[in-house]
Image (cartoon, rainbow, N blue to C red; front, side):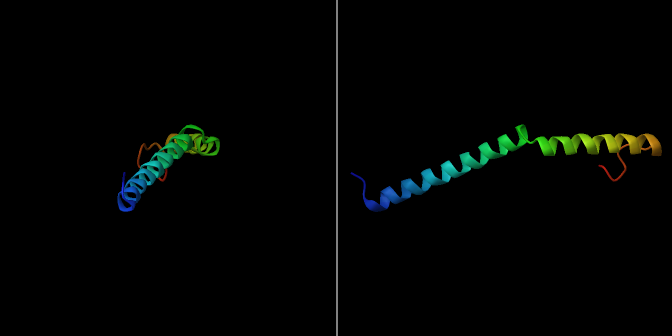
Length: 64
């Protein structure tokens, strides 16, 4: 049988692992299912391409 101190140590480790797994899962979901962020990226990419076409530069502007 575990002592109270051993039980607390094990519980803390389990809570830490659970928290890190939860944060990792939320990060994955945000990357995968972020419609607003994805639309913003598409919009910014279009603006970047338009700017590069007009200015004749690539990879040197505001959008990089």
